Image 1 (cartoon, one colour):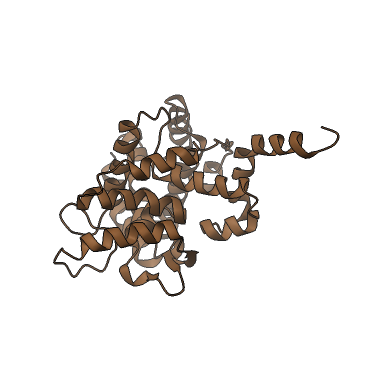
Image 2 (cartoon, helix red, strand yellow):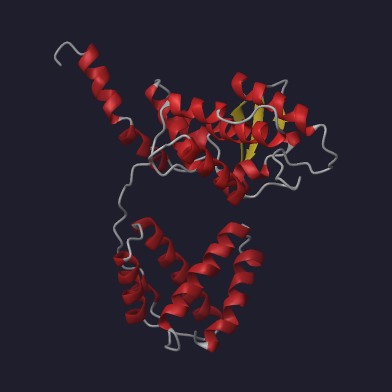
Amino acid sequence: MNSAYKEVVDDFYDYTKLELGLSDNSTSAYKSDINKFLNYIGNENISIEGYINFSKDLQKIGLASSTRLRYQSSIVSFITWLNETQNENFEVSKYKFNISKSTKLPDILSIEEVNNMISSFNSDTFLGVRNSLIVEFLYSTACRVSELCEVKLADIDYDQKIIRILGKGSKTRIVPLGTCLIKKLNDYLSHRSQIRTTIPYLILSRSKRKIDRTAVFRVIKKCAIALGMENDIHPHSLRHSAATHMLESGCDLRVIQEFLGHSSISTTQVYTKVSGQHLLDIYHETHPRS
């Protein structure tokens, strides 16, 4: 890596975190993307030719267009900052070439598969009850894995039957607290109450600390493998599945948008493609001209 750039990457990281106020996940992603690009070009200076070759190689190794767009966003932000703070003169517009964004439909679990995951854990142990709650919570609230990790005991209102979810951009949304989730929470909190801890977060790790994203990923992965699921199942699969099941049951797309915490309806509309077969089935069952 060119030593001149290496020295300022940390400064850019501080800028995104302290001045832009981005989350730890976002700032770490920026830094990782930029470092990978700088390692790719080695001792060469940043150039549009180098970036085009980098982007082409990302495509060759099979990275999704959405991932390549993220790299582009990170690098464009970095060179824009270099222009403003380091007296560089990059033609930023040339780095913003079109990368077609394919719409990859998410893997969707059936309701039976979700139920099998929830009931697959040992209900006599703390970790078993916790893991069952993790699956139930992700599916019942359709929250992101990072949002689950941030849920605190105080965020759950049993009287109003709601949960406060801290989403992207520090935006809070309210989601319903369903009866199945209440039962899982009661089972889990009964076990949790036997642990001496002042940690305010709902889900605890093995070491009785706040759980992190990677631990949640491992729980879902191991569960899916143990049940012999063939698809690539991860925490987001439960979020996608919840949204699709709601849509197929007749829920309005705008309600699902609010439930998921999407800022744009276009993000939510991917689920209309996922549930297209359901629409065809209903059409053939009900339309007199089918």
